[in-house]
Image (cartoon, rainbow, N blue to C red; front, side):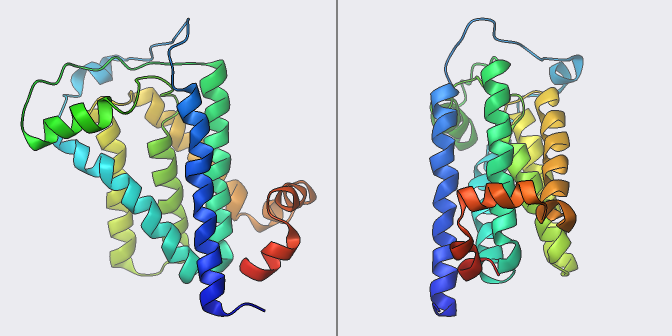
Amino acid sequence: MPTRLTQVFNRICFMVTIPLVSIIHVVLNTYRPNMHNLKTAIDDIIPFTPMFVVPYIYWFLYITMVLFYFAVVDYKYYFRLLMSIIAGMFVCFIIFYFYPTTVPRPEVFGEDIFSRLVRDFIYKKDNPYNCFPSIHVLNSLLVTLFFCKFNKSTILRTLAVLSCVSITLSTLFIKQHYVADMVASLLLGTSVYVLFTTDSLWNSVPVKRIMDFLIPARVRNLYMD
């Protein structure tokens, strides 16, 4: 049997599945005919606020920190969280393919650090397509729900909720997403969370077969139990 340190290291290595799966998003993130625009009156009211780029970028660190936490402390649920993220992303990819959307962006002329980050780091590296649902909001919600369910610290749970809320708002205030994208992610994230945290569903035969295909039982026994 591997040592505890080896187990933790090997569990952490499975995080590479997220950037690997994200390659699909890169492939889909191109212009296609019949792009849908889901802009609403509420989106017109929300002002472009460059400083919200900070929580938007913080998303990368937040997701990683929570996954590290589960890999080390609550390892029994580490793979549940990781698989919920991947499953949610695949649902998004299917929607992206069959229902492509776009969010036209404003011109950013400011030379302050926040404006430059939005213009040069976000807008230039991410095309304004594949917006519904928002993967940013989806993954933030999933890690927050998991963390708040299995962590009893009021302070840490509060920080997690504030992180999720600020990241969600950031997608709207830097005009990466519309309100419809956010709502769709909240509904999808809640559904995926229930599926992956309800023992009767998690232990069902169909889910076990999927798990056996994605992660063999031998690996699960070493790193998940």
